[in-house]
Every structure is written in structure tokens, then in C-alpha cells.
Length: 483
Image (cartoon, rainbow, N blue to C red):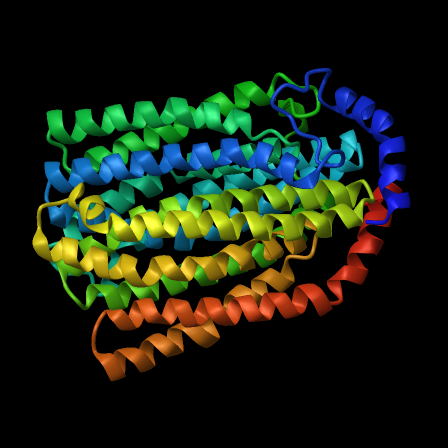
């Protein structure tokens, strides 16, 4: 940014804030306008509640894993761990549409277009309800097929099937919450999500202990606790949305607005395809993992839970840079978008290095929280020793992808992810599995895939045509066009 551009931004700062006050109903508490101020400071302010939210979610997952692992067995831990990737296969398609809602809300917020913002919200809610009901039915029916296709061990199968069907029965709540929360994030509110997750995580953990330990319901108890907490989160986020005239849900407006549904799908479908491909790849990875026995599955499950703590800042900063880019594209401030990308890459890299070292040093006691089974602990330590160091590559890739996606061009990140998993990781797993014949092949394939993904996104970010296209998109939004 040149000095002249910097001063121009300062000259319009007062009018920008005044408009933001109007948009936010005169209550800026917990809201962040990304179009003014120092980019990295705004992004950190937005990301911190998201990181804390992720910590709460992961703490529940950790507690649930400990409760199931010790209250049921390491077989129960394996069953719960297996369900996640399978569940994501059927839900990931709609999660991409939710990301489209996040981007559009942020862009319309940046452009201060209330009508477009409200039409997007009501259209997205209708889509989430319809998709949730359909996927719930499909998931319950296909759960046995999915488990059989990936060769789940017989001792794990009954528990995994029970757990999956319970989660699928409440999938509409998960979809609605993700969509509704994306509206708030698009308008710069990440604090509400933290408050809601703080409440529901405590409820979830309490119910999980009650159902699994006290009532002896096994993995089913963990599933019931999860579904109830998801329902509660939907209720709480709706209450918050009703307090703002821009986001208040009106039954009369709940319909599919054609042009806005088209925009949601235009931005959301590439991300949805990306999520589906990643989820299917996850199933394939699980298929290789299951071939090495129950202890390896349980170790992988616990190791993945630990690794998620390392990934939290990456995910939170990525989720932050996306609405940052979207709001500034809507406001016509493209230079701030590129400035933020550089700053978030530096933040991500430093934070990831520190967390990775801590996890590697304390991997044995961390694994010991989940189980006393020696084979499971050994399997988890092996997984962490290879997977955790590779996250540094993703720490650079994800913010750049998030900026491009937030600018309204999600196809580039989609292609990057598909190439990583389909063209690189899966063939490498097959090759290394043949050469090594150990589960290490699965883990080393991630390092190779992440290396490719980073090289690809660096080239596209700096040389791609999206930079020119985003200027036209920004100009259209400034003129009130649904471009």
C-alpha cells in the first residue's frame, strides 16, 4: 500500500465506522469491521474467539474420547474415531455451501447491502434444512454400506454403526448451526460462537459422562449427548440472530430467492466439491489404517484428536482471513486483502512451530490420557511423530487459499485440494504401502501431498488470473450488483 492510499483510507474511516454502526444496529460489541484498522490486529481479534471455540470443541472431543476409551474400551474409542471421516463424507457437500454463505454475507456487509444480505440469509436457511433432512435419511440407510466398504474390523463394526446412525439422525442441527454461525462470522462476530460453544461443550461433556458412565449406554450415549448439544447450539444462535435487524429471521422471508441461491452455489459448490473429495480421501486413508488392526485405529483416533490442537490456529486464522478478504472486496479495498495474507502466513508459521514442538515432546503422556493399552499408545506416538511436522506446510497453504476463496473465487483452492489428495496423496499411499508395508506409508504420503499443495498455491496466488477478476467483482459489489 502506498502512502497516498494509506491516507485515503484514514480519510474515509469516519464514514466507514458510521455505516458499520448502522449495519450492526448501533451495537458494535463483539463485532469487527475488517475494512478499517491494522489487518493483523483485526484478524487476531477475530481469530482468538475462534481458537477458543475450537479448543472447547476439541476439549469435548478429547473428554469424550477419554470417557469412551476408559468407560467402554479401546474398541469403543476406535468406533467413535472411525465415525468422523464417514460422517464428513455426506455432510461436507453442504459445508461448502455454508462457506459460500459466509463469503456472501461478508461481501454484502462490506458493501453495506442490507437487502442482499437478508435474502442470502433466508435462502441459506431453507437450503440447510432441506439438505439436512435428506442427508439424515441417506446417512442412516448407507451407514452399513460405508462401514463394509472400508473393511472395518468385526469387533468395531457394531459400535461404529450405532454411533454413526445416531449422529446422522441429528445431522440437520449440525448443518443449521454451521450455516447460522457463518452469518455471524461474515459480519465480524466470532465472540457469539465462543459463548455458544462454551455452553454446549459443558452440556455435552456432562451428558456424555452421564450417559456412558452412569447409564452404561456405551458409544450410543456419546452420540445422544452430541446430538442434543447440536440442537441446543441451533437454539442459541437463532436467539442471537434475532437481536439484529440485519440478521433477524422472518418466517415470511424463508424461501429460495433464485439469484441468491445461485450465488450461494456458485461460491459454495467448488468448496463443497473440495470438502467431499477431502472426505472421500479421508475414508480411503481410514481404509488403509483399518488394515493394520484395532490398536492402530485407536492410536490414529487419539493421535488425530491431539493433532487437532496443533491445527486449531491454522483453521481459526484461515476462517478469519476469509471474511476479512470478503469484506474488503465488498468495500473495494483490495490492497488490504494481500496485506492480510502475508501477515497471517507469518503468524501461522510461528504459532505452528511452537505447538508442534510441544506435542512431539509430550506425545507419550498425551497418548496415555486416552488408554493404558501399550499398542495403542505406540501407534499414536508414531502417527504424531510424522504427521505433526507436516502441518507447517499447511500453515502457509491455508491462509492463501482462504484469501482467494474469500475474494469470491473458490475454484482455485478446490483444484489445489483435489490435486493434493487425488493426484498426489492416494497414489503415493498405494506406492509406499507396497514398498514399505507399514502404516508409516499413510503418514508419509501427507508430507508429500502438503508439499505439492504449498508449491501449487504459491504459484497461483502470485501469478494467477484471480487477481484481475477480483477487481471486477469488487467494482460490481460497489455498484450494488449481484455479480
